[in-house]
Image 1: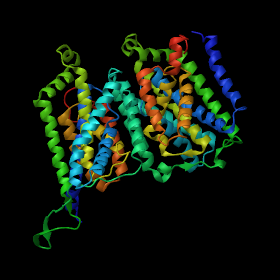
Image 2: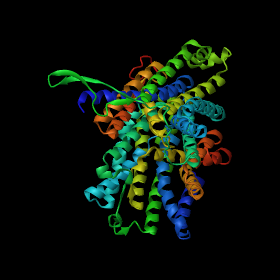
Image 3: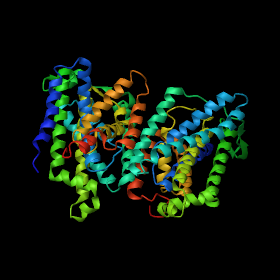
Image 4: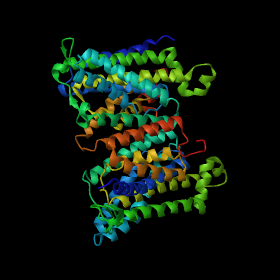
Length: 308
Length: 314
């Protein structure tokens, strides 16, 4: 295959990664922005979403679309409820102290991961995509001296992958609308701006926190349900998205939603493109170093302008 | 301040008991205690930065692995004998700790935790990337013939126990002396209120830098000894899990106490050892312990003893 088609294919694959990554990272960013805590267990909520999607699809049987749509609703709700429960029982009791929260969520990470290992098992299991038509993409080029159209081998993308990109976009617009246009979004923004003042104005800050923690985890779970027909559900699948989401949130500017989405596009696309041409380990080394250095030298993030 | 007699007695007493234990312990626990003493040395190193200086690092596996690979790679590829290899490992750890400190200490709080986590992850991935030399996840075995230090075969259980005891004694007494020295008391002051210490005219940055280098060097020494005594170096020891372990041990035993790291390592080691007979998901125990500790006993076991019974315990 020539360079051109190769690059565009890599870009499309990258866009799928970016879409799911954006959902996961926005969840993490929302939690950090409003609650000022870092949730290390975020990747495990992602993994739970995928595992629950598999259970739901198994139980319902029938047409794959039925199980998938049910999972799309059930998994984020269950995971969100679990996260909200964890918030009330653990984080609230340590008063959202930033450092102790990190230690507690590390504990939560191992609890969720190991309980999944004990119940769901170490196997990777697939969930069938609701639809999986292939879309052949045409490629225009000069052949000999004639300009013409061709369809190089392997030069296609499944319709499901396009669906993932659009679905993630729609959800992100929904999150934006919730934050900017609804009353609960207003409460969240007020809590983010000044917790004590919000409390003084009678905003139930603790309930807002539980809700935000639940929504954050639910977004990660939603991303996982979208990706699980492409990848498989596995109890260790939360490790990589956690790291990537961290990278995205930090580069995008901690707590800034537009910055997070931009950074997710940037990282997702470059991840797809870089890993086609370079060793994935080397790409990961560079990415983690980049995050460390950004935090050291530009703590407001590459795209952020406000001071953190 | 002179060291209280009771304090010195307690800490030396622990070392004497550990020394004497090797003559009575059955083989299985004999091996376990040797391992625990090396790991507790790692925790002692971690405690200097976390417990006494108040800097929570999530990247100490980087130092542990630097010591282990500094030792292992020089034996494997440069034909070093154990003594220079151990020194190479410890020096590698000190260098890495100094380098990371220069960068990470520009941040504080949560950013410090994430920066250390990220650099440790980059270090772990680097070990995997150079799999040609490090053998990546699979790791490499250090042969028995390569583990003879001054005519003593370190693969022999008795010699191994002695070496582990020696390492632990040095680290343990070093930390006992350090935290009662002028330098150590300044570190404690930084933990309690950094702004005030700076206002009093201390160079807090230099003190934190010193603490991180000492902490990293002790961790590297533990890593180098671990690799040499148990004859294996693998990438797992550089993974996030091995950054979490010392945090867990120190939290359980009591952060900011000299005895805490050993107590925590001992308890957690046997807890995991017992539970691994029941389930393969032994990290569940670690997770539950972390959550419970943050919720109910942030001071740890020794910390509770200090709070209730013995106020002056260092």
